[in-house]
Image 1 (cartoon, helix red, strand yellow):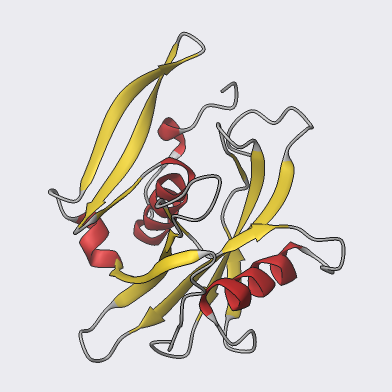
Image 2 (cartoon, rainbow, N blue to C red; image 1 turned 30 degrees about the vertical axis):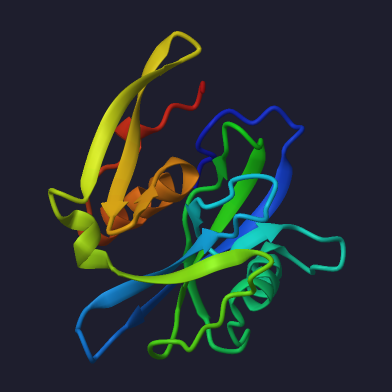
Length: 187
C-alpha cells in the first residue's frame, strides 16, 4: 500500500467507508455513495463515500469510517464486514489524508441521510461505472505536470476528485488491471 498524492505532513486524517453489497432485486454488486448537503462549507453537493475526519475518541480509522457512516446515513455499525483497504489518498483542495476501508454489507441496506450532512444516498451498480458513457478522463495540469483526472457521469451526479480516484482503484483491483498511471507521488 502506498499513499497517492503528495503529503506535506499538515493534512487532517480521515476514514471513509467503501460499502459494497449485492442486490438480488436487480443483480450485481453495488456501492454506497452520498451527495453531500448544500449546507456544508466544503465540498457541498459533491458525491463522496460516507466518512470523515478522525476524532480523538476514535480508536482507529476504521472506527472513524464506521462512526461517520452511522452519523451521515444511519448505517448500523454492526453490518459492515471489513475486507480490505484501498491506498490512502491526499486530497488536493482540502488537504486531507483519506484512508478508504472496503467492507461488505449482508444485503441492500436501509439508509436514511442526515440532512445536516447528506443530501442523498446513492446506490450505484459497479457495472454502471464501467459503461463508456459513464466513465471519462481529462488531462489536467498541476504544478506544470500533466495528470489524468477520472470522472463518472451518473444520472444527475458527477463523481470526480478523490472519490472517483478511489472508485477507479476499486474497479481496477476488482478487474485485476494496473491503475498506477493515474496517480503521481509527486503531486
